[in-house]
Image 1 (spheres, rainbow, N blue to C red):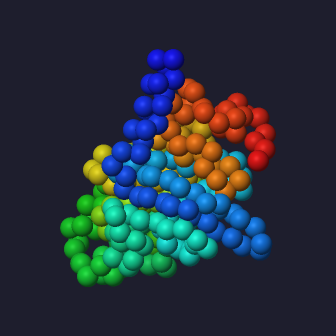
Image 2: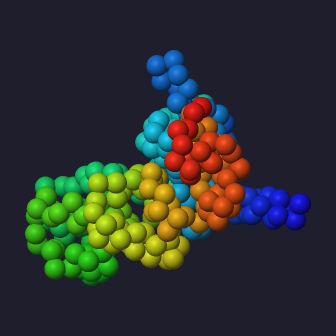
Image 3: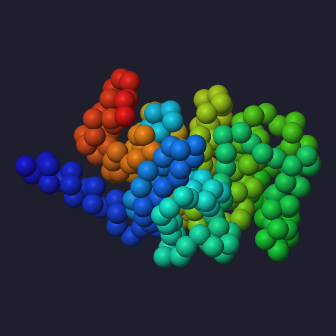
Length: 250
């Protein structure tokens, strides 16, 4: 009984001081509910990891929370506000495949700063040094390796100083060295106060990064728990099967 109470208290703690609140979020396409009435409270700090089997709705939920897609029903609020332009400007998103301009490394950063009405060589140099690209500023961005391109994409997102950073499997196609570099950048951003929402299929990565885990199955939240609770005592059969390497059925 004491253990059960402790687990329940840990799960309740996830909902404290939310940065994001999702209510009745639904997305329908082709006559199917791909996201089905999701209710979710995203903690205001740390790294929230979204996990689940293929087709569970992880990337779709990420896009809905960032306002890249319009929900069929339901609401998304960040720090008490709806997804208006001002709220979205306080957010950034990095996709699995880097999307870069056909310009130099430094020019990719300057472009984003210019869109925000800022222009600072010092900021460009600082963010490139932070992601380990300080010596590549003049190089064409498209000539970087895959891992370097993803670090540049992260730099471009972080230079805007987002309150919330969405990451959709940013290391899925990278080697271990590049993955470690990305994870280090993400942790530092979290430590500075940026809220991180990270989609991954990699259980090891989730163990390394997650403060809390949202587990999706069939377009619904099967559970949302602190990371230690999720990995040690998953509450849903779907999560237990996933962690054990078994097929997850809806």
